[in-house]
Structures are given as C-alpha cells and as structure tokens.
Length: 52
Image (cartoon, rainbow, N blue to C red; front, side, top):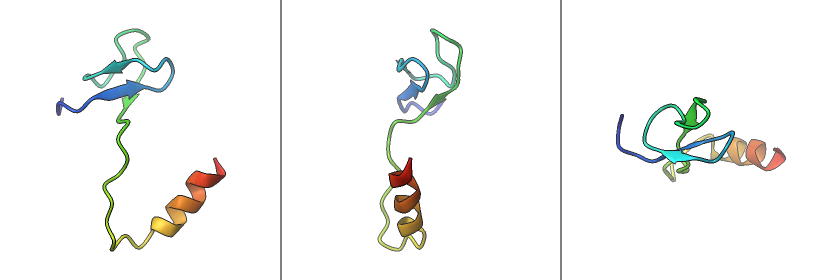
C-alpha cells in the first residue's frame, strides 16, 4: 500500500487499500497521469479518451 487514495469503480467508495471494503472489487487511483511536455503519445491518448 502506497498511501495514495483509491476509489472503487463499481460503487464509488474511497479507500487506501487495493480492494474495496464494501464490494471486495478492485480499486483504481482517481488521480490523472502526470503531465509531461515531452509525452509523444498524448495526442493519441486524448483522442481515445474523448471517444469513450
């Protein structure tokens, strides 16, 4: 456990663990990726995220 807050995608519960304490599902980090001006694939990532 790193100490960064995580969120369950299915029920929206915030926790510090890798699994949700309510539904036992996996959690993900709600923070966006770190910005870098040298990111070669940023254009493609923005295109794919705007389509979903």
